[in-house]
Length: 242
Image 1 (cartoon, rainbow, N blue to C red):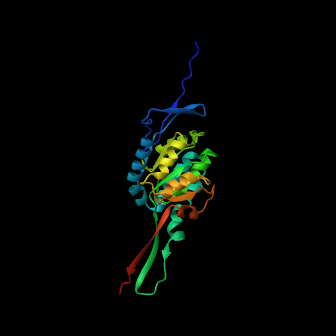
Image 2: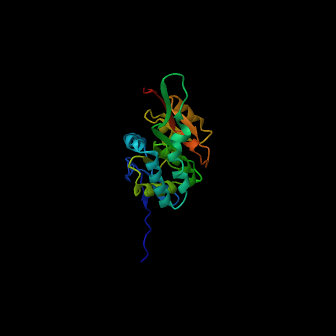
Image 3: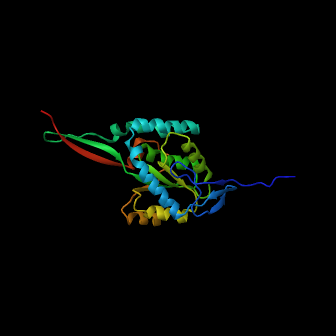
């Protein structure tokens, strides 16, 4: 007697766990059943990402680099992209500023906060990692809308993250219909920045209505300056001691 094949249903990745969509919906992609996230799932992901921001941003850049390097080791590829930038941020993007007066003036990079990422359709894994690495290296948390047609790469990345030292909630991955999720991500008031492909004027307009920073994906660029798109530069004045 032959067995009837049963397709596995892949779930979402929220807060370090793998829940089903609250809607119970699925869709078929890459010969598998994939959870179809709802708008409520997206709102939950943003809430979880906001809650995880303090812990992740509070780590030193060096420690974040160690965590991300471990993630890359587990993926057995692209180790440098995740880890080499992080401990150089303060030196490259910040520093002491010359001022006239009895003050020290310093510029220090700080995370923007919660970043929404609309992953490119292809290349599924490379495209997602290239977008996610600078966001995480800068101390931000992320809500990702995975590739609708090639979601398994994002799911496999979620399985790596779940067994790594990345705190739960730092990365949250939603699979489902891009046209349903991406506009809601762009208009969500508790998302601070949006990373998306060029040419999507509708999403750019939705983000502009709530003064959200929009970063247009520039491909596989490996530079500390990629991280600066997701950082705020804070200037601090301090009086000189006698």
